[in-house]
Amino acid sequence: MNYERVIEQVSECCRKVGRQPESVRVVAVSKNRSAEEVETLYQKGHRDFGENRAQELDGKAGALPADIRWHFIGPLQTNKVRLVRPIVHLLHSMDRPELGAAWMKGPGLPPPVLVQVNIGREPQKHGVLVEGLEDLASNLEHLGMDLRGLMAIPPRVESPGDARPYFAKLRGVWEQLGQLGYRMEILSMGMSDDFEVAIEEGATDIRLGRAIFGG
Image (cartoon, rainbow, N blue to C red; front, side, top):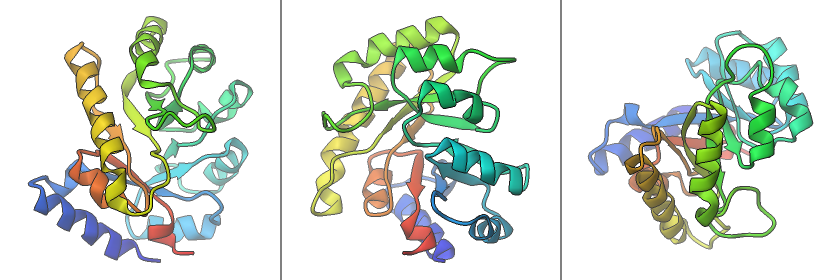
């Protein structure tokens, strides 16, 4: 496990660009990891974990400490909302009005969400295209949703620096929505291979699996 090394890398990258390390939240992606591995990281003081399958999240949440902040970071089917909604601290992958309507059903207010943007316009990926982002944000706010920001997974690139234009574009549309009055607090971008570039471009949340757990 490379947790301490990753935290130091995050801190060093923040210092280089004049940011406070506390301005970046590390979401440890624990998909396909055992509850024991999550518990080990929990004992080191980490609390934010990301899952992308509803059943796996449900099983782990029931077996691990209640103060873990679970993030759902994968595509979510409307019929799996009932499993995810009661557990998560934040949904990173809101991407369509139908999912928004399902998310609002149930007792109490649902957890806050990020809109997933298909920043590379890849047909195989989930997420709203940039030109549809404002309409979706308006729809979600009309439903009464607590919209907090944006998330994206850029196309695969040969080197981390090649992802920079996608991160910069996402930050640009995030800032534009903020100027329109939307509550844009969270910018979720950057994974194990490119998180340092993402931090340089303004990421507030980075999603790291292999960089922390290895393998």
